[in-house]
Image (cartoon, rainbow, N blue to C red; front, side):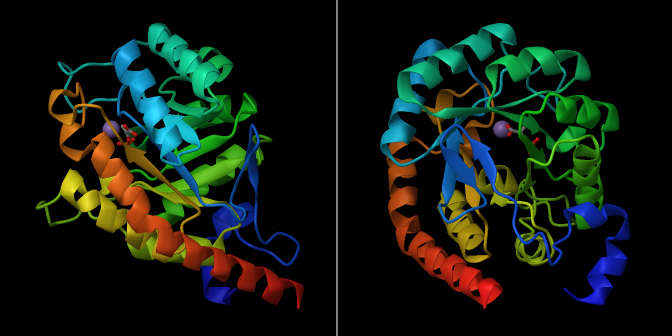
Length: 289
Ligand code: PEP
Ligand code: MN
């Protein structure tokens, strides 16, 4: 790695690649995130009803997703918007896992909730709005659950890596980084998808990197294209919002794919994922050689 990056990210040195540590593989149930397989996480923005969650879980499982997403504790920009079902939502997620075998990723917003969420979730999501909440990061790290760390909407790559460093320093090596778009001067879309950050993170960090094309643009029509770009940039997986009836969704309906759109996206990703497989295999050979 270039000396420039070592200097630039000196405060997050443990997350940088080293001779000894080229790639972290995060193991969740029987899955390996950061390895050869490309992992798709899919599901609704919020857990709404049993029918909504279970029908989505079964559908995305059939379509090739391996992890179910869904918020039970929701960080919302408006204090009047739906804040999530809390424990009842976690119980629905556990039911979906029991029925489908999908692993569960769900957000935890407060350190007080970490023990409860960790009891139900296979991966704890730290949301964009919480990325720099160090008390939460420490508590989440200590739960020993893998952490999906979303980039703050106003955070630099360095800020993201420093937050990941906090988790590692608290004894938890299982961190997955997530690029979900940042705020820029251009407000045409919900956020600006920083695809260069994905390429950079894959070059400098041993942690798995996933792309969130849903929050990155805010429009379902653009999600499949952004997903393909994320794969081409080197992402190890995707997290994408899917809803049985996006027009009626309680949160983020505009950016949620319906079932048919999810299937089309997955089909369109196939050649990109195949190409990624070849690239990963070549890189592994180069590292060995
Ligand atoms: C979400 O995943 O639904 C979410 C709230 O994401 P972010 O923290 O990236 O805004
Ligand atoms: Mn959302």
